[in-house]
Image (cartoon, rainbow, N blue to C red; front, top):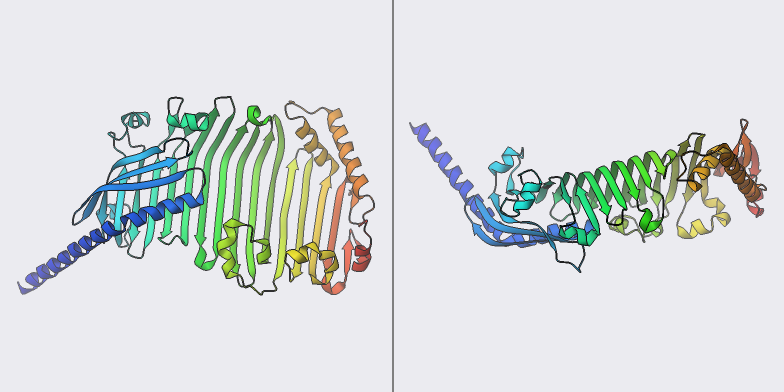
Length: 463
């Protein structure tokens, strides 16, 4: 009996503690809601320039376990037009530490607040009907006791036609698939992860021009405390047909993946860039596929001061560093029906900055290692040129192809025929070829298999 009374007493105390904590959380929400909404808008407006986001609230009603408020979200694409209201409805903010709505979503860590939201039918009856009699927008926002935000916004597919306000802004029709936007990170926004997935973006201008993107995915991970940025962009298909506005053939790209990673330390900036394209079509011509893969180490501040997206990383790099910089083009290639163009290079330089880069010829003592390899068959180059200048033809004739190959050969060999850096045949294949190797301790270059002293190479201006 005594044990049961004790248990009841403990439960009662815990219950009162929970109520008190929830009530305290409600007071915090009441005081900080304006700042939190302003922070969200500022972050969203800083990472993109397509529109300006604004979020306001009114009619707050605070309870013990939840706060009810009216939220209005608007976006403005053009200052000449009125903002577009995308959300104008009541929401319930559940107080912590363990909101039931958060537990249902799998969040087991204590949360200060948790909001699940979706627009009602009353907000926009026609929009409700257009997306299949369901909410157009739904999602959640959570804030933990460690000041970490968890935000999700999911929209249903929608088509905006001539009767919609957006038609006047974009001069055309807009067809949007499912959009899934996620953000997680601390409220200072110095450590965050952003993910955007769009199943379809279709745009048809009233002059006939069009844009189509399928399965666009963007992920951006940032940790400014560790001076780290990692960005990935990919899509399945992109079709860009703006013949009327730009007088250019249709461009189609299939399966593009673009990955950038940057990290700064006291010795400079390290990073990598990787780009892959499965297919590139220009007009009716299938131009081929290609890839770019390179990385670098110890890049000096002087190369980065004009790169606004990298400025937050510069503080990590020392002011008086003498970096040993490396740039490595691991793989650069393009493939078409005639074969492959391949390129790779490695440059290792001491005390490398913009001034050194401009005077490298007279500062060869700073060069530690240099490797360079190029293989560009004339037939591959000729095929690319013939297709590029005849984008609307179904097929390139043999005569057009032969003419393009001969023109490429004449131009290249006329430009560099005196240089020992290049040869024009390799393994019975005509083209532009080069292989250069240099190590500082050898004080000589090996150029296409032949040794040459560094001073001999540099003193001849034709080289």
